Amino acid sequence: MNIMVSAAFINPLSDEGEIIVRELGDFERVLSDNDDLMQIVTESRSQELSDDSLIPHNYVDLAIKRIEWYAKKKNDRNFDHKQYDFLFNTEIVKFDVIAFYLLCQAVGVKYGPNSRESRVMVESQGKLIENRLGKLSKNERGEIVTNILNSLISTTHLKWTFFEDLISTKKLKLHDLILDKGEIILDREDFLERFSNKIQGRKPEKMYEALIGDRIKELVMIKMVMQNTENYILKVGEISEREIEPNPILLKLADKISEVLAASVQSYGFGSGYGGSVKASVLNPKAFPPCVKKVMEGMKSGGRNDAIIMFLTPFISYARLYPSVFSENVTKQISDVDPTLLIVQNEVLPLIFGAAERCSPPLFEDQPQDKVNLNAKLGFGMHQKPELKNEGETTWYTPMSCEKVKIHLPSLCKPDENCKKIGNPLSYYNRMIWKVKKESKAESAAEQKDDKR
Image 1: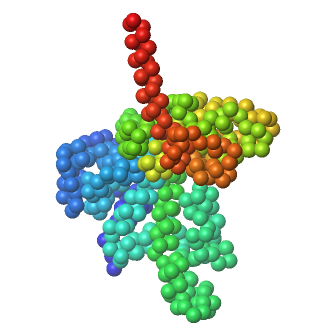
Image 2 (image 1 turned 45 degrees about the vertical axis):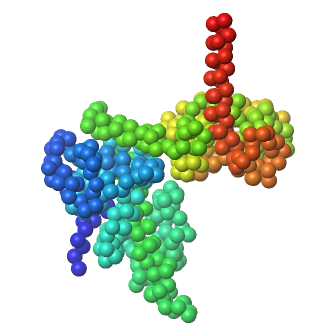
Image 3 (image 1 turned 60 degrees about the vertical axis):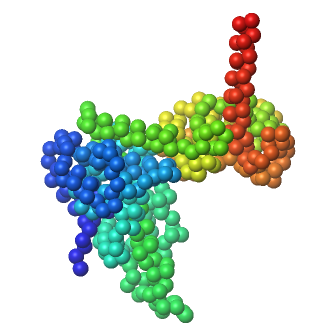
């Protein structure tokens, strides 16, 4: 049976994808209106196009739409997938492959492999593959996954060390895989040969489907394409360092990618119920809950560590950078809202370090290793300082709930009248921000009235 879907539709870095790139010819064509592309877009089965701005007219437009799709799908609760149905039309493959390479090259040239833009490009490729596979028939899906896997790896006698990069970057976890004598088992016949005589009470074929089957093969294939995408961006970045002047088309596309990502953070926030969407802004200590104010004053030795590292660090970082985390319910990394980490360096860390200094004895003088734990709670792994290259090694911890504070740090919980019906210190802060602003405006108006008298 012939594969109806090109491997390049799922893996642009495949041999088919490279052929498509070579056939492009003049690079300047990426900016020219393309009637064939526009026809495919407008004739896609479930496409809904309310205006011309939704139609990509050329390769660069399509590249931007790829990133826009991912940013909106991730952040916008009102996301309309029908506006992007053309991305799942298999006829678009020749244009899509060029768009993929444009994105990787733009990101690699301007931002490099450790950037937010690179991470989004890699993640968006993974999500696009998942969604595209979901649109295929079972036979098409199984056959194309097997075809791509066979081109990437040998599915028999595959040492687990082959996936060292995937495992070290946490794209793949060993517990997702079936191993035998250090080898990863993906192939059905290989599984049956190794385990048929060891399985009792169940059919070996059923066990293969339950433990491996299409699910694990798809997972491995997707993660490998993501890793190869990241490697390609790295390669582009290394080459661009040796070149004098990057192509201006790529630089403009890189700027547009950054604009799309910034807009997704700013435009798709959701209301907190306390006067509208809570936007990131300079912290106002007047709005801090009593528990935070207590930690800011400095803690005694008994509760210093947890109060500063487990409690204050997540609170200060989210209150400053992403106060609407609970209302939006969208997981982010710090670089999504602070791409250069300047706010972290100039505002977040000084507040936390100040509270640590006021402890008795000062926390980081007494236990300097806790700076590493602090960075881990911000999502930058076990390192001495936050750096983009380490982001994602750990999770950016969300603030403790009031219930957890009562259990783990009971000495902090001295509620005031505004704590009623509040479940998290961050919710308290978001509610009080509006109240403090309102009071400040009233005071200012009263002062102006007195001055006029």
